[in-house]
Length: 86
Image 1: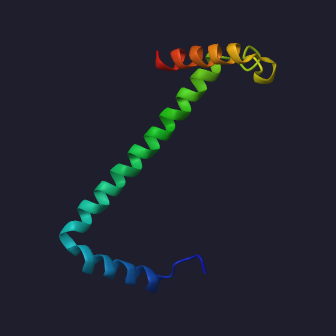
Image 2: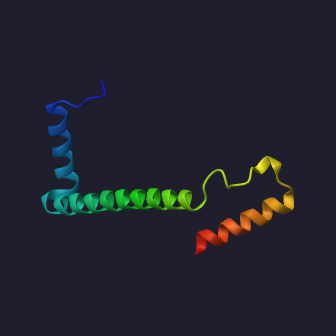
Image 3: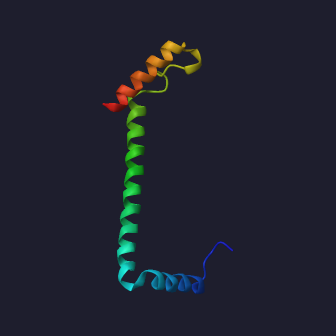
């Protein structure tokens, strides 16, 4: 039930032609492709930033939250925010 057959795809394309017209479909496809590319680039960039931050702050050096006082926890949060901004 999850896969589309040839008939369903043809029906979807026909409905798209009726709704948007033949002149707008290439524009929609182009903008959809650009949006998908931008999303993938953003995800890749976020993964690279996460890897870079993990390399800067190894897990062994990070203090454990359950062993910290409230003041130390707030200071650590401020420090991490400053590192993230720079």
